[in-house]
Image 1 (cartoon, rainbow, N blue to C red):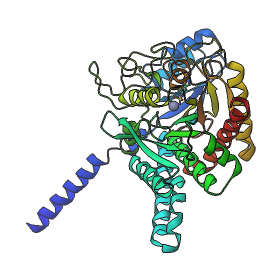
Image 2 (image 1 turned 90 degrees about the vertical axis):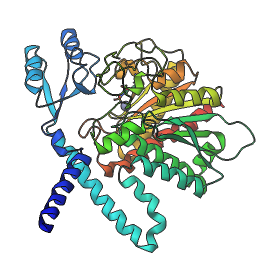
Image 3 (image 1 turned 90 degrees about the horizontal axis):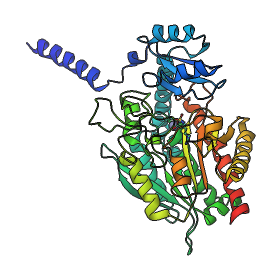
Image 4 (image 1 turned 180 degrees about the vertical axis):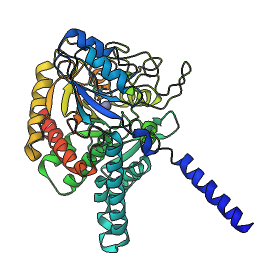
Length: 438
Ligand code: 0X9
Ligand code: ZN
């Protein structure tokens, strides 16, 4: 009897583990990412026709420019046939997404072990913060980092709540800057709007820490930035989606809002801003990865951020940078039309300086330019809203590493180098803005 109930407990226990740990690796089995390059208008339109059913890791937009799409065992035959009947050539970028997810997990587990060992050794206790960027962190750890930084640098950091996510998580940002009697111009940095782009919150928090340690160590450039600007840094704008990528499905992009009209979940928060909402490069199909949401600002995360900027930072915000991945681009408006903004030369000049700086440390090549020219048209994104509606003159989208070999699953050992080079670009650009404008 005793043995029977033990066995029953064991069975129930393993069943529980399967249910709870539903981010089963087998769901990534034989998912492939292929790269296609449309060479004429017909091929381009044919690819765009696939958009509502297929997860485009990089959207097709222009002839001769590549697009990356993820195909599943269910649709691969159909897609291959579709491509070959239209003479669209492809190459395999990731042969099995499962392997990439598995590698990422293994590496994160190893780092976790190493850090646990470090934690137990007293002498190294103070260096623990360094471990934060050796792996990708969960929502709670990011929250704790903000608390730790605020406690460590009470005169330089304030953690500020600006709303709640759809599932009720707190949305917090850090205000960072040297104390000043004057109202300083603001640099607003938005991280983690797309759930699966894990390098974004990692870089943004690394940059916050770089500002603080640089100021503490009297680094002249950083001192200048900290005395000139107030930084408002949102590490994770889409915590619901982000947590979902850690627990259920690594490749989730959107928010997690429940839709009245569909069983599909979430909207693309970077199609949900109220500037040219619903224009080019968006979808009104709730199942699409680029779903606009039911109306502009329908997503509480986007609403909270934009309300905060309008209410507290209007007229002061000088720079807005939305941090994404992947592709290595520094983009500026417009993203909804191929017309240039009146500030094109200024935006372009700063982007050139930043990308030159980003190449210095590790020779990483970042392409810069207007969104619609170098990438694709996508309306309702944060950068267009910041420039067009909030009148923030320097508005950018930074797409971090890599150029496709790992895509969203950038290996954790690249967190620090990526953050270092991106930080170099930010610092150079902000110093140039001070020289030019203030
Ligand atoms: O499509 C997006 O939202 C961004 N790329 S991502 O692969 N991270 O999803 C690019 C947005 C560029 N800005 C505009 N189109 N306005
Ligand atoms: Zn993104």
